[in-house]
View 1 (cartoon, helix red, strand yellow):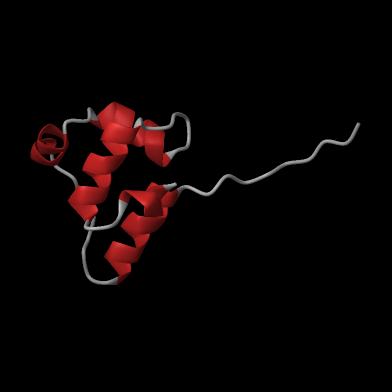
View 2 (tube, rainbow, N blue to C red):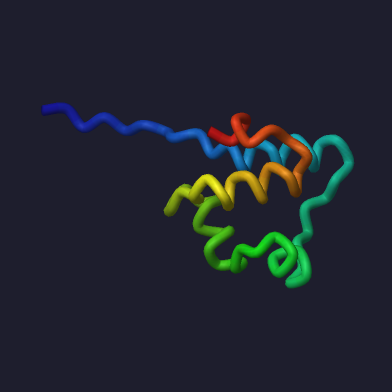
Length: 73
C-alpha cells in the first residue's frame, strides 16, 4: 500500500486570491460575515478545506464575489 498525498483545490480561496490580484483586498469585517450569513469560523473552515459549504452557502459566497456558483465546485 502506498501513501499518496493529494491536494484538493480550494475554489473559494482561488476566487479570493484572484480578486486580490485585481485590486480587491480581502479584509472581511464582522459586517461582511453578517451580510453573508455565514459565521467567520465556518467561513474559515471552508477556506482551509476542513468543511464544504452547502449549495445555499455556495450561492451566497458566489454572489458576494460576483462569480457563478458553478465556478466554486
